[in-house]
Image 1 (cartoon, rainbow, N blue to C red):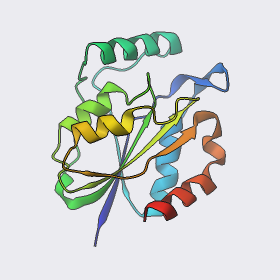
Image 2 (cartoon, rainbow, N blue to C red):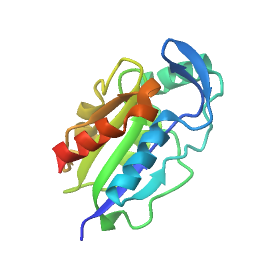
Image 3 (cartoon, helix red, strand yellow):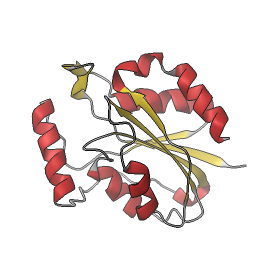
Image 4 (cartoon, rainbow, N blue to C red):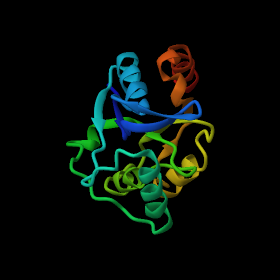
Length: 171
């Protein structure tokens, strides 16, 4: 039986939503990850960076920008036990500066994803997947990168049909 793993990084605290800054108790990407878990019978793993990103949206985006510019690989607090058991990796993240947060880069560089299927999904407020799919292909050249899903953060709570449609397309 093929095992599925949903891996995600999500930013709660202040987020940009529909043109304003709002405080989120649950990050947008986490909302999508949990919806996917119910539909896919998958295990769930949250990427937790060693350093916490700031509560303030503007501060957080500036740190994210500096990490990207300087190619920082933030250390992670947790690891996936038995990654070899999983064939399908559903990888979720917010789109920051047109790609994945650098802690997701750290995650991808920490494991061997050879011959695994990676299904990217992201939340955003207008940038879509940006260049994240190309970045995943560069980081995981021996993986099969599937069609990604992007959902506006402001629409995560109404995204069930879009998620179901994506799952149907990729299976």
